[in-house]
Amino acid sequence: MDSGTVWTAKFGNQTADVSEFFSNVNRLLDNISGAQAKLVPEHYRALLYMIAGASDAIENPNSLLRPLLNAALSFSPSHDVLSPAHALFLIQALKAKQYKLALQLLKYDVDKFDSAYGLTYQDHLRFHYYGAMVFIGMKQYEKAIEYLSIVLCAPGFPCSMVQIEALKKTILLQLILYGKHALRLPRMANDFTSHSYRAFARAYDHFAVAFENGDPTVLKLVWNQINNIFSADGNYGLALHALTAFRKRRIQKLRKTFITVPMEYIESKDVDILENGPGTKEFVLAMIQDGDLRAQISQKSRTSPIIVVFQDGSITRSHLDELEAKLDSVRQLNEKIAVADRHVGQSREYLSRKLQSASAPGGFLSRGGGLEDLEGYDDSMSMMEL
Image (cartoon, rainbow, N blue to C red; front, side):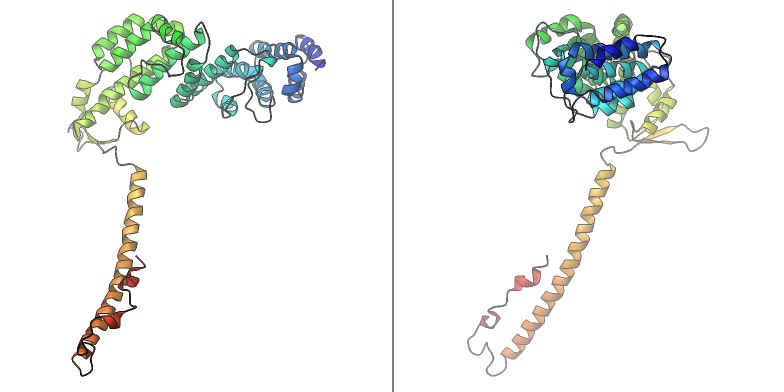
């Protein structure tokens, strides 16, 4: 690892050939294990930050993402140990909007943490926070909430600002996914985090209350008052998604009342808070196309009104497959019943013959017998196939 200092100095030379620089970086990081990095953590971190700084300076920063990813993945064979490269790589991937590349690291659960590598619990928080931002970029909101919950539950006093930022994003994501947010933090969150919530995320609380209230006039009023806070926090885009979700939910609620409804009526209920989005018809068509609304558009002629026909959202393909499987089972059961019926019919013929022979001299009824001649015959045997 002594060569790390030499390489760090060399990478700082801006006159070095760029292609050679990339080649040397890849070769060096591929050969550094977690055990080696543990010996001189300061040099290792300096090397990583030098690479991150170079990626910001060169014209093609994406070319240095792969070396940082390799450094994180090669840190431990099981890929479950947090390294100094994890959060650093995610930061650079977010800057370059290379979300899919970042998922190659996030597909592994990182649950081991060793301060011997020069890491602190802040590195742990940053990794999961930036990981959540990657999932937001991929619109995998449930996975993003999972990562943010890890940040919120991290121990520490006083409360970290990373946790506050995680809480703000969690509120917006819960509004997008569920139409409401839980005022209670995860049970593992410390008390100081809970108290800090009202102090640092009060604007988000007001927005959530107006969102859940369902009154677009109130929501628009709150939005006009606090949208600059969303912008300052870097959450303006996520807040816009929340407004879109609010608009969708107002239209989706009509399914609870109507089977068919004129488009004009939907237009009377539809509210675009920012008044710069698509019209109601285009918005409804987009919802149907994206699977956010189970409905069909019907119009008999150009002059006739447009009718939206809602479909039963409770009937999904999985339900249809399950129903078809049950019908197959019923058909098989009917076939078995038919076979059993034939056996029973044969049994009746046997009994009929016995009854006919009973009237003859020496028949079993004349001997005072009963059904003893059927001893050993189990009628249920004919039903075994059922």
